[in-house]
Each structure stands twice: as structure tokens, then as C-alpha cells.
Length: 182
Image (cartoon, rainbow, N blue to C red; front, side, top):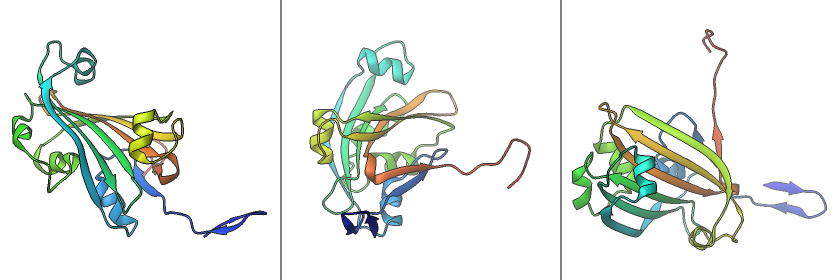
């Protein structure tokens, strides 16, 4: 219950928390809130990488990729928009996967070994398409996590942009000063 001066009390929706130093499993985040989880594939297309995608994937030539967009849902209100590019040279089996039983991020976590991940975290305004998918107003605040995951051979496995309505998510990191144990 959230109490607001002069406007009364309201039942607020729980906030998801995720650690900055882990690859998020969105189903686990939603389940931790005690909510039912589902996801919907919005777009899935096998094609050649664009110039921008070659940059984020760290490749110099056009490569086959799988573009997937999906919406993660705890009930009726969208929780997260996932826009993912999978490098099909690194993960060729993804080309034939339907992603009907398991969301792309979870599928990759369970099947593809990775050795390095980078997160770029920022606040942004929802563009019209993102706002429509997340059922928020255009230009509403969203938390964006851009994540690149690489294999032991330094090949990029995937690049994903996760967009959360700002009121539904927070990042948490617990740490101690260098050289000291908690």
C-alpha cells in the first residue's frame, strides 16, 4: 500500500528487482513477484545483419541473424519488451527454434554457454511503437538495458534491448569496498 498525502492510499504494483551483474531471466523476475508469467512473440525474422547490427555484434561483414521481439507479461499489463538479435553463426540452432515454449533469453541461457556479458543501462523516453507494446504513453519513462553476450571465443552470441516501464523495475547492486569481504 502506497500512502499519498492529500490523495489517499492506493495498492501499488510490486517492483521487480534485478542485479546489475547478472543476465536477467525475466520469467524468474516475474515469478519472484508472485505473478503468473507469460510471453508473446511479436516478431521473428531470419535475415542478414544491418550496418547498425554489425556494429553492436562486433562483426565487420554482414552475417545471418535472427531478429526476435517479444513482450513479457505478468497478467494483463506488459512487464518488458525484449528486442533481440541472435548471431546465427554463433548459434545456428536458433534459426529452427520456435520459441513457443521458452522465451528467447531463457532459451539462450539454458542452451548456449557464454563467457562475457556487457550491460549498458539508461533511462529513455518510450517511442510510439514501444509505448503501444508496453501500454504506456509515448515519451513515458522506460528503463533500458542493452546487453551484449559473448562466447569464450569472443564471438558475439546475442544483442538484446530490454525496455521496462520505469515504474515496474529497479536495479539493485550489493558490493563492498575493494579488498574487503562482505
